[in-house]
Length: 148
Image 1 (spheres, helix red, strand yellow):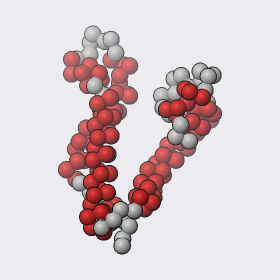
Image 2 (cartoon, rainbow, N blue to C red):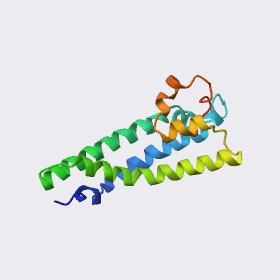
Image 3 (cartoon, rainbow, N blue to C red):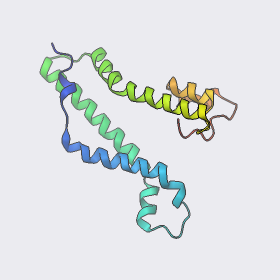
Image 4 (cartoon, rainbow, N blue to C red):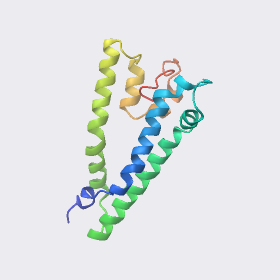
């Protein structure tokens, strides 16, 4: 059985929705503070900024749909689903970009271009950022939006 059966299929019709989700997230992160409280900003810009977190939710919904679709497709084609192969494919798809991101953020911190301390970097590298506030009482996680 070919364990990569499901990884070569693409649902092109979802690219537009993924693009909208990504743009909402980017606009929300990049421009939210710029227009916050501004009377000069248009109603449309404020509406997009106020709902930019919808992009994150939309992206997670699409990811859940795609992952479920891939699992069902593999099970239909091969008669089984291999969880280990599935996680291996996910890791090879996600981790290279994630590691490059961590390298860039570490470089920026080293050069003084970003305020990131070691605790923030370690929580991010270990996928523990969402739990960090339970463990870290130093207050160093405040303002760590680059990694959060």
